[in-house]
Image (cartoon, rainbow, N blue to C red; front, side, top):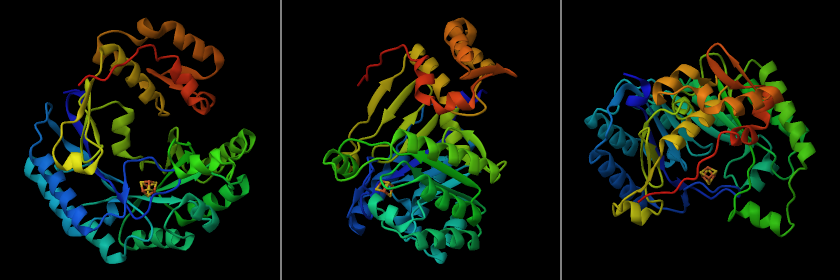
Length: 384
Ligand code: SF4
């Protein structure tokens, strides 16, 4: 069976946060009490139990608990969710079980409890190790709490630790990024995700920028941050395997690779999007609508859209697009479909074709979205 003929991963969304960060437009709600959480976990378990998945769930399918701030759930709540997955056969010798956690929300007993539940990888929302930047980002933690959670996680036995950092935020400089990154690498996580800031409408950040109260670093300054990050991470022994993701050898995120390889995954929870290879289903984002069990939005992807998406998701990775997988999955060759586009990117020095893969060069990765545009030709309409 080809990997795109079975679900390879399971995503669970926990949409609660202590406080909304100034740049965040993810589906997460602040200020929810224990009762709201209980209601939500009940609805999530109901969704899992009533799932009629059109494809089999692969043995070894990864589990990813994201948010939001999943570490606001109690161990009992997580255990109940995992039990529901086990009843369905979805928690079946997973190759990886990741939980996102924020500094200041966990203690050592909690982390040890996670290990006992089978969680073997943590993704920590560190973002910066400068207090003034963390305050502007609206994060609830301090740099000391960020250092502490890394230490605690290691003591609790987590060897697979991922830390997120942001660059390009107001007041950040190449020097402040360098300080955060150098210290973070010294703390020794096995994986670092580093995201260029994107300003989303409706956020506090976008409002402050519009009012002229905050200013973004210039393109030149952000470019200098980008160059510095690439240089320091590689020198520090982290290999880039995706546009924004770096790992020590063998410590890539197995779950996120499912998205980038364009393989199917199940998703549960408010606002969560699942994918079976030809259609995408997105659950209701509002808690009340989700808990009432209102139907998800369904988007049927035409074969042309599937081909485009498979290309640009795979091009995010350093490995690139497997030409054999493309041909096997769609019954037509990549060369036949995109000959002129690929030649143009190769000519610009943005891409190359080697060892059966078509991949972006480091220069092409820097231009990311512009390079992907070469493959986007199809309009898409959501279908209910
Ligand atoms: S912790 Fe993450 S999900 Fe929650 S508000 Fe901040 S950025 Fe958004």
